[in-house]
Length: 324
Image 1: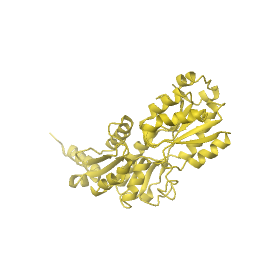
Image 2: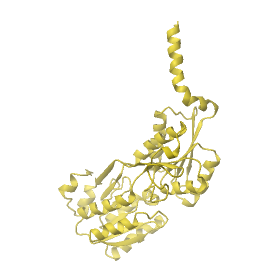
Image 3: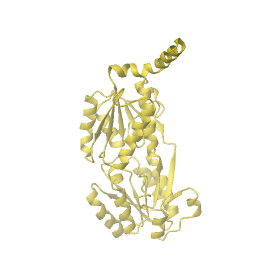
């Protein structure tokens, strides 16, 4: 038999969750998720699942008090604005973006729906906000400093391959170029001539490496763009076949055969995105949620690739890296 004390305890426990569920009973919260890539892309799916699971840990259950609307451009970046518009027309409460291009597309179609960055380049440099501490538009979330990371990556590559004198920088002109000036400055600082190698489609990758070899480049750095992320393994293999030490901020680049990866824990941003979404759904304003910067960075060196390139990685570098 249920006692009066037990009944009151049960009612009291229920009251604790009512503030979140009361609106859900009338209409579930609706959250949009916009990505440049395809749902079949393993890395992008990991990001989405990290975000969804973090929301679940906060009490949001799809089909009960939450609906997540997903849109994937599947590499067709010119579709992003249309897909962002679809999400806005669905009256999402918050729109989460996976990458810089989805962010820019979302900003082009709404100035009122809160936008949360799961990952993005430097939010200030790309114009998402005038400052980090108090967002000036409808964008908050997690960001990393691409310009600073590019400079650090060049330093690490020079340390790993000290004989390098000409660095190829593979870029997609369709991507944001906010880190380009910092990359030029860093290359000059380390006495490296910089050759920009533009690649617009995956079909151009092989020819790009042929150009690097022909122009006597002796190391290559790969921009952390969406297209390159999808084809990171191919790029790493081409670099090795061309006998070029290669580095990137791309997640898992070294695991896929590149020499060096240096960058933030990209999944951190998607765990953080769930925190931002939770606060916004509970009534917080974007302006009151400072944009957070990446706090965890990792250096990964592929020792098999180093051996194939006949490079001896200095102990000082090994001690700071995760060696695979």
